Image 1 (cartoon, rainbow, N blue to C red):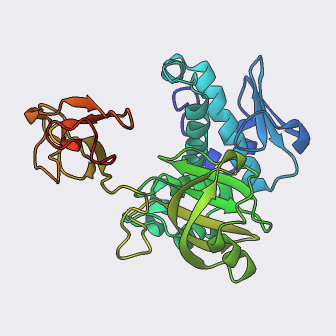
Image 2 (cartoon, helix red, strand yellow):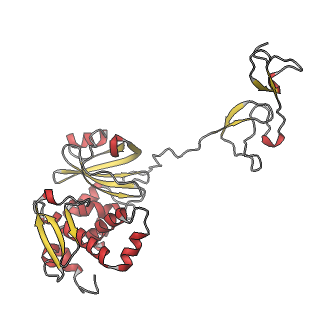
Image 3 (cartoon, rainbow, N blue to C red):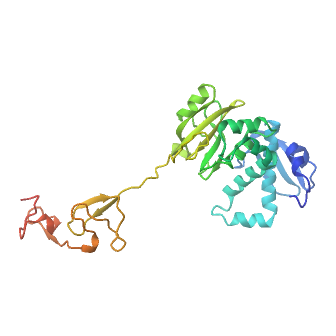
Length: 321
């Protein structure tokens, strides 16, 4: 971009729509909302051609229109620059997910330059209040602010924009699967409390993915954002807490075994033997390397048991005797 349009970054940051209307080979069109749905994370669309068309929803605020125009410019650059196209083609889904995220990040970086973001978001990561303060100090949209804040999350998580009904208006995700725009998140008690009060709250909750499937429990903090609710959600390292261990189920889990020496079933947290891949039996203290078990069928119940279930040469197991 800098090669073909030198010194343009600052002009795009001040007024993206105005600047892009001056670019040869591009046409900016403002269209109704219902014509902008093409899978983008914003209300806009990109149409390749000569000229290429950047379509932007006319009903949005000026800040949101600038963010949308820059997002669609990102699509234009990715689909006309060979080096970017190659990166996308290497992705499992053909680059669809990466392209959307990259377009959001590109737009946010133009509208919220690094020095401004550094003034509000510390190295520990974004709090909800800091993200809102960054938005108020700029001309950027709420969406652009969410994306910029998500880039600085210290752990996997999301920065969410929630409307007054508890529906997800926009989500910028980092290290976690993306959430669906429009999904109902009002079941999360932290968000419900914030929506019914001042907007400021924090706690834990599980966000809803497609078909109501709940994700991992996350730390959540919220703040009011001009008629919306901004929520920062992370798995751990929450910047607003002095101690925030992972909320995920990350502890050790026991493995199940059948002892090859005495035939007893058991579970164990102990490391497995590197040769037989069995932990020591808590009853006889043997692992599978000392295999001793042979079997005998009970003449009464006809179940095949290990020899430990029989007394001497008895043909009946201990359960039947």
